[in-house]
Image (cartoon, rainbow, N blue to C red):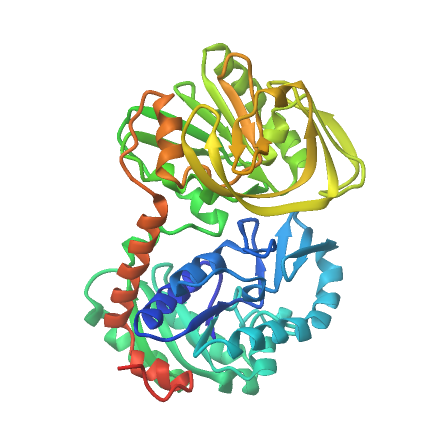
Length: 485
């Protein structure tokens, strides 16, 4: 089990890289995360949902994603509340305080899912959440040491040197953990080092001396990680300056933005200037396309969008002849009205939409989760997935945006063709669909299928970790006799 000294220390990427490394060496590998908190999710083949990071790690293992890989998923829809998903199925909404009492009852389910994976694998690589040093969360824990003890798995602790104070982070974790938790840790890894690794030899020796934990290696800054889907919205807060490109695509950063990895393939396009617009800034006047992204709380984020003045910016963008695309919750916002009579995503209520598409949506308790393939009605094959609550109706559906294999249709397009929306996530991953959408903006796609880009990045990361980490020691800690061959 790989745990971290904090969030965003690179646990997900290191687990994905090690999954690919061991899979490339002939092992049957499975990823596992007992509890995840993220609004970036993926649909499994059996119609459930799990955290996006575990779906990526399944890809790294070259196996289909399973609901057992992330049996507990929390999808925040407010600062104190989240939707609870257990083995891929929505089980209601929980406030943070109530969930702290409930989560202990989920430990048997979590351990059972781990056992299911272990029965079909040579190696299960487990990812922790946050940090085990958050001792205020230790009672009833199912995400870190609570799970590690229940499943009897050894732990390796990760420190992030890029953010600084890595010696204090690792030594401090050793200091605050109780004896049983401390003894379960077999070694430590350093992540995100830039420069000559010999410069930190003395630091690594000091950590080992102060903790007694084995030094298992230090990973360099992995540039290839930027080509992987990101799970946490913190990455959107790090703008990357770029040259003026052929087209500008703007995505407002809604307060509960979800599945923003939909747009990773656009980021890789050399003719696309993809801009995530943070709160407090207007939508850019030079945008060719504004994309309203998915959200975990559609009505709340519609109010947030208006509070930011983005509805006014969007109206001006449309008057200037700009294009708009809504994805999932963003698609719902483009309609005339949204109602949540049962309080599925927050307090019951309704609100007028942006009025750019002739549709209306009612949020319902049944959640649609399924992979889909088909074509854009204007041409361009896609593959993606639906993950939404709500039923949409209206005259606008007579001009669908997508045609599914099998005859179903999805989405709506305005009479002039400049406003469109649909429920499907992942539209930009396939080269054909992305080429068709960019062609309408006057740009040429040059990046090919995004899955190929991600797969190559996983191999590159695996090779880097093979050089940086003591793989033989990790194999021994995992209880494997040796690697094949």
